Length: 426
Figure 1 (cartoon, one colour):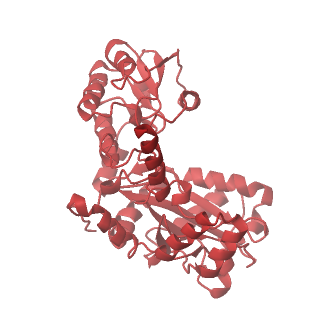
Figure 2: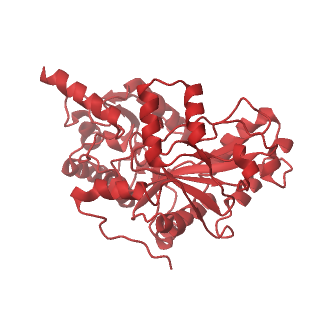
Figure 3: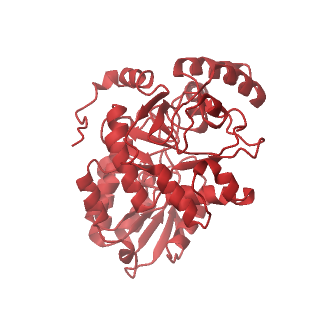
């Protein structure tokens, strides 16, 4: 049985030092391996491509079977398929047994909801993945990345179809240089390309790296063979508020700590029947929490409408909460006084005070109303759902995070805070 570390990581005042140590050692562009027969991601992906009607025996020659105009559609379908139950079970087991143990992570952990499946063709020289870091794409400092190639790219001649990477300390220097000198894409490609190295891996191995490691292909694939790979991010609960714009539940899926928990969740009956409780569905939009303040209500509304259509939910009308009233009187009115179900943007639109939040959620369960949290695709229908939602809120440290959720931990963010503070002080 796999043993995991579950005791507290470090004292609170040492938490950043422990994170820095982990990022600059275990997770600094290191390649690890495992028994591919236990987690045959490459075979699963190959079977999915075949299931789409393409005759294919080797992913390296996908370009000979899938017409160029259909590759984008295949890619997006594969990304969507990574949320199928059988794939998630295999992925969750892989994370618990390999990523957590080899990466020296602490439970609980959350994993990206949809994997990024990428296809790098040898027939499109104008298309390649530019050098970048996760921080520049809105990922937080504590998020960790996995890159798994589904074809063998260990040979030197495979360099142009593999991923290139730079160590974290040098990456920090180079990114600072690129920002200060306002380098364009071509200049960054040339600068980073000189210092990057090829990740040598294949089925049964992959690269663990951070959101500060510069990585990408940086050049066209000139090998004559296709590269198919998967990448995703993992986060620990202890750093649940250091995840930048990729907040838990919306971007990350909290995975069960054990196979037993996995089995129990799989055995739960579907909740769709609970949605049809005879009560009207009312939209709720607001900008009254740290997480929703910067999200325009019309964008929230688009998501609510899209969600309702996907779930076949009828909706009657919407209510706004009152600006600057942080006690959320409109939401309380819907939950406590109206006989209705609520369709709202996020669990992070709930009261930030934990006691108020728990009282609201428990009131909704007692009164038999359903609350739909669209961004996270979570629904509150019963006491089990309440436990799950509380786990996500605890994971993210909602209402007591070290930084407002939705802002990346970076020097740039700190400079913005200083600018805003100075303007307020004046």
